[in-house]
Amino acid sequence: MASKRDFKKAIQAACGSIAGECIFAQTVQEDKQEQWDDVIIEAAKLQQEALKRVNAHFGDKVKSYGNRKEYNKARRAFFKQNEKSLAEFFRGQLDQIVARMNELMPGKKA
Image (cartoon, rainbow, N blue to C red; front, side, top):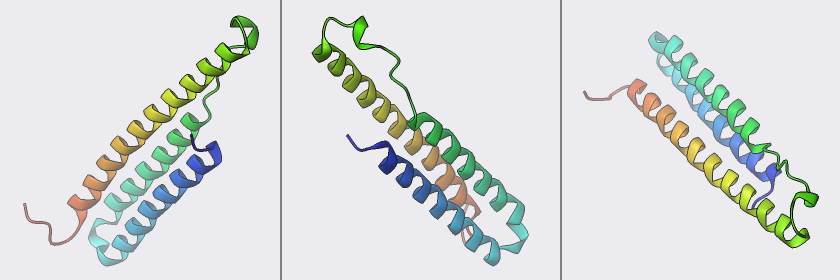
Protein backbone atom coordinates (compact mmCIF):
# COMPACT_ATOMS: atom_id res chain seq x y z
CA MET A 1 0.00 0.00 0.00
CA ALA A 2 1.32 3.42 -0.89
CA SER A 3 1.49 6.18 1.67
CA LYS A 4 -1.03 8.99 1.92
CA ARG A 5 1.70 11.42 0.97
CA ASP A 6 2.33 9.58 -2.30
CA PHE A 7 -1.39 9.53 -3.11
CA LYS A 8 -1.70 13.24 -2.44
CA LYS A 9 1.29 14.04 -4.63
CA ALA A 10 -0.07 11.92 -7.49
CA ILE A 11 -3.50 13.53 -7.25
CA GLN A 12 -2.03 17.02 -7.22
CA ALA A 13 0.25 16.23 -10.16
CA ALA A 14 -2.58 14.80 -12.27
CA CYS A 15 -4.96 17.67 -11.57
CA GLY A 16 -2.18 20.21 -12.07
CA SER A 17 -1.33 18.70 -15.45
CA ILE A 18 -4.95 18.90 -16.53
CA ALA A 19 -5.15 22.54 -15.49
CA GLY A 20 -1.91 23.29 -17.35
CA GLU A 21 -3.19 21.69 -20.52
CA CYS A 22 -6.41 23.68 -20.25
CA ILE A 23 -4.50 26.94 -19.80
CA PHE A 24 -2.43 26.14 -22.87
CA ALA A 25 -5.56 25.32 -24.85
CA GLN A 26 -7.11 28.62 -23.78
CA THR A 27 -4.31 30.52 -25.45
CA VAL A 28 -5.00 28.68 -28.70
CA GLN A 29 -8.79 28.88 -28.53
CA GLU A 30 -9.71 32.31 -27.31
CA ASP A 31 -13.37 31.84 -28.24
CA LYS A 32 -13.82 28.97 -25.73
CA GLN A 33 -12.04 30.43 -22.71
CA GLU A 34 -15.07 30.20 -20.44
CA GLN A 35 -15.55 26.52 -21.24
CA TRP A 36 -11.87 25.82 -20.53
CA ASP A 37 -12.23 27.69 -17.24
CA ASP A 38 -15.07 25.34 -16.33
CA VAL A 39 -12.84 22.33 -16.98
CA ILE A 40 -10.12 23.84 -14.78
CA ILE A 41 -12.67 24.34 -12.01
CA GLU A 42 -13.82 20.73 -12.38
CA ALA A 43 -10.22 19.58 -12.03
CA ALA A 44 -9.79 21.71 -8.91
CA LYS A 45 -12.98 20.28 -7.39
CA LEU A 46 -11.82 16.77 -8.23
CA GLN A 47 -8.49 17.44 -6.53
CA GLN A 48 -10.21 18.80 -3.44
CA GLU A 49 -12.61 15.85 -3.17
CA ALA A 50 -9.92 13.23 -3.82
CA LEU A 51 -7.59 14.74 -1.23
CA LYS A 52 -10.43 14.71 1.28
CA ARG A 53 -11.04 11.02 0.57
CA VAL A 54 -7.36 10.15 1.08
CA ASN A 55 -7.66 11.25 4.70
CA ALA A 56 -10.10 8.51 5.67
CA HIS A 57 -9.88 7.54 9.32
CA PHE A 58 -10.20 4.04 10.74
CA GLY A 59 -12.33 4.84 13.77
CA ASP A 60 -12.20 1.52 15.62
CA LYS A 61 -10.04 1.01 18.69
CA VAL A 62 -7.89 -1.99 19.55
CA LYS A 63 -10.17 -2.67 22.52
CA SER A 64 -13.11 -3.40 20.22
CA TYR A 65 -11.25 -6.43 18.79
CA GLY A 66 -10.18 -9.65 20.43
CA ASN A 67 -6.48 -8.89 20.04
CA ARG A 68 -4.01 -6.67 18.22
CA LYS A 69 -3.71 -9.09 15.29
CA GLU A 70 -7.43 -8.90 14.50
CA TYR A 71 -7.36 -5.12 14.79
CA ASN A 72 -4.41 -4.83 12.38
CA LYS A 73 -6.13 -7.17 9.93
CA ALA A 74 -9.34 -5.12 9.98
CA ARG A 75 -7.40 -1.86 9.70
CA ARG A 76 -5.44 -3.11 6.66
CA ALA A 77 -8.67 -4.30 5.01
CA PHE A 78 -10.27 -0.90 5.63
CA PHE A 79 -7.42 1.04 4.07
CA LYS A 80 -7.13 -1.37 1.15
CA GLN A 81 -10.84 -0.91 0.39
CA ASN A 82 -10.50 2.85 0.79
CA GLU A 83 -7.56 2.88 -1.63
CA LYS A 84 -9.53 0.87 -4.17
CA SER A 85 -12.64 3.05 -3.97
CA LEU A 86 -10.51 6.21 -4.21
CA ALA A 87 -8.76 4.93 -7.34
CA GLU A 88 -12.09 4.02 -8.97
CA PHE A 89 -13.60 7.40 -8.10
CA PHE A 90 -10.57 9.32 -9.34
CA ARG A 91 -10.28 7.39 -12.61
CA GLY A 92 -13.97 7.81 -13.33
CA GLN A 93 -13.94 11.53 -12.72
CA LEU A 94 -10.69 11.96 -14.62
CA ASP A 95 -12.13 10.13 -17.64
CA GLN A 96 -15.10 12.52 -17.65
CA ILE A 97 -12.84 15.57 -17.51
CA VAL A 98 -10.60 14.25 -20.29
CA ALA A 99 -13.65 13.50 -22.44
CA ARG A 100 -14.83 17.07 -21.96
CA MET A 101 -11.37 18.38 -22.87
CA ASN A 102 -11.39 16.28 -26.04
CA GLU A 103 -14.75 17.75 -27.04
CA LEU A 104 -13.35 21.26 -26.76
CA MET A 105 -10.22 20.56 -28.79
CA PRO A 106 -10.06 22.09 -32.26
CA GLY A 107 -10.33 19.82 -35.26
CA LYS A 108 -12.79 17.52 -33.50
CA LYS A 109 -15.09 15.99 -36.12
CA ALA A 110 -18.69 15.43 -35.10
